[in-house]
Image 1 (cartoon, rainbow, N blue to C red):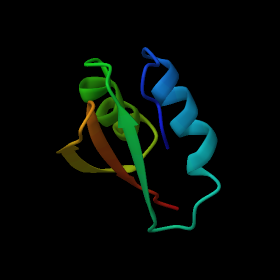
Image 2: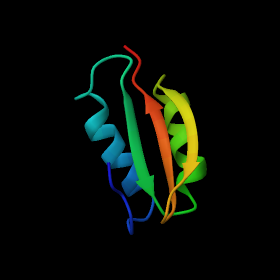
Image 3: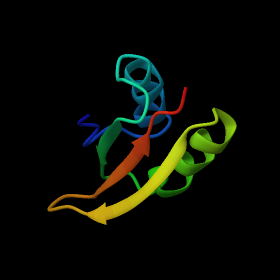
Image 4: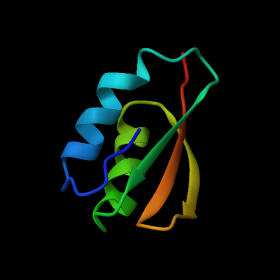
Length: 70
């Protein structure tokens, strides 16, 4: 999911929209360049009982990985 150039909370809002469309156990990769995503995405995962699977650098920003839980 590409959230480049979008400020929080938009990346989290977009993540919430797509998480239900992926099968249980699948990963959603969120590409974001807003520094707040580094805190907001793991916090959202904790609140929504989803698994925060980590972060990796990207050419622009970072990729945040979220694994869908049932």
